[in-house]
Length: 398
Image 1: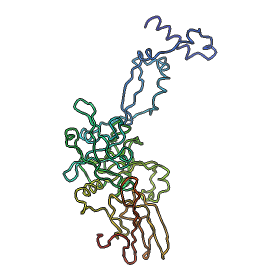
Image 2: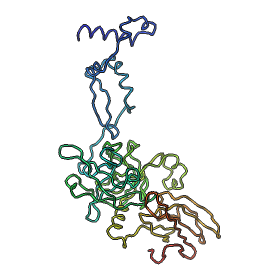
Image 3: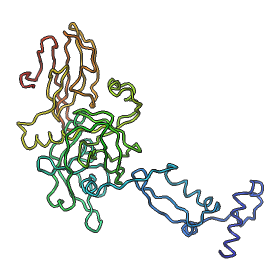
Image 4: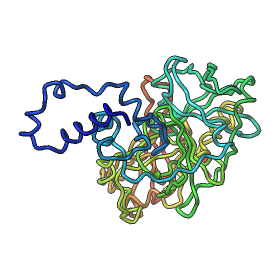
């Protein structure tokens, strides 16, 4: 180090170590001294590293690790995001998963607004995302992909079918043939994951690719999967990403339910009073297949059953969303609960203390168009006679 450098280091060390009374007596030229950006750049390099599934740029110290260097960089460090003291090591995502997941945006100029992925259903390749993503960016968004040189390019797509925002919050679109060289579709697995499964997820958090190597499954039903992602929370833009078991897609991430709602929900007793704050909700992949069936065979498409005590009430299609469930006793309303999308609709008796002569009413909103007023339908099942009344044909249920 030059004589000037040694002198500067000595004065800086004195400045940070001396009491305030001594600092006030420093020579005037030192009080006016400014550490310039050029000087910082000489001593410190900017590096990127992956942390908590996103890229963060921070100022890293140079080879010298003395206290003086750390103090001089303090103003620069304070302007960077707050970082955990002990970041966990991250595992890279499998290459075939990375090739199946991409982002959607309103235009090439607006990046990373939502996640999407390609999947093979009944021999056809479809793109999948969350329906509410399209509510934000429009029905004709752009896919962002990268060519052989790593340069991004954009292709516009058009949505084909959408589910209900409060039910099957998903949408499908066709992958343009010219993108086949850049996208490798995932295979589908309609078997519901259990807490015993090794579950992963991949998507984009604020435009940066994220790979969650460990996802804890809390609850599964044909209508919703509850999960907790390692290093929770996921960030904006992750909706529309796949949930994976053995590399196959078992669900579509559609959002987060916060602590306020989880504390008072009726369904908490089904989770054995496990300590849960925020958690993630996923639409099972079988709803993607039902949307595909609506496109390919609209007259034959069906949904899943809603039952109580093994007795069918109605089919629930991707266009439907259960709003509330009522229990009548002796002709009067006895109990009413709001329907949570992750309730097990095959076992509604878990939410009611039913008697032989009770009647159960399920109220459903039909219609998936954004901004359109939903059509309300109700279905009554008399438990004493097994009689079903309402819009549905009871003979068609099985």
